[in-house]
Image (cartoon, rainbow, N blue to C red; front, side):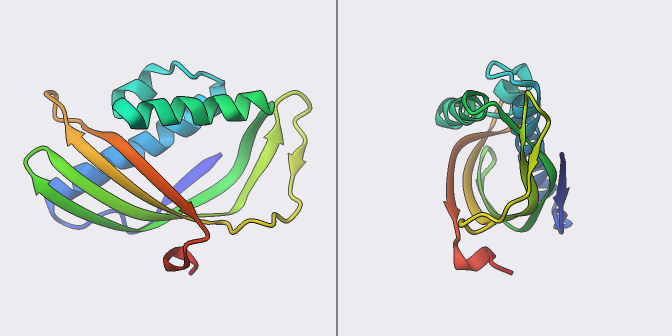
Length: 150
């Protein structure tokens, strides 16, 4: 599995730090799926509150179906808003058209076309903790949002 982050640098040090930690939270979720670990310490490092609970449920859903994934997910068009010294929001797009479900037991990859759009819009809220890490505290996702279908 590979995540590609396109245009995730703004030139603004604060916004770039926020985007860097959003990159880490995305990778932490995928690592937890790959390893089958709902109690991943990395996941808990980059996510708190509702975002951590939703990520653990998401990982569990993959495990319940005996699935992981393979391929490439492209993340693009990030928009960062920094509200104050420890609060930010990021909206970004994902293109999952080259990512495929993989059966954990057999290793079989399902490349059959999906009825669902491969484009997902993510809206996230972040808080900076005492160590300076921008932790995701809330995540909303919308599959098929036209703003990401490009």
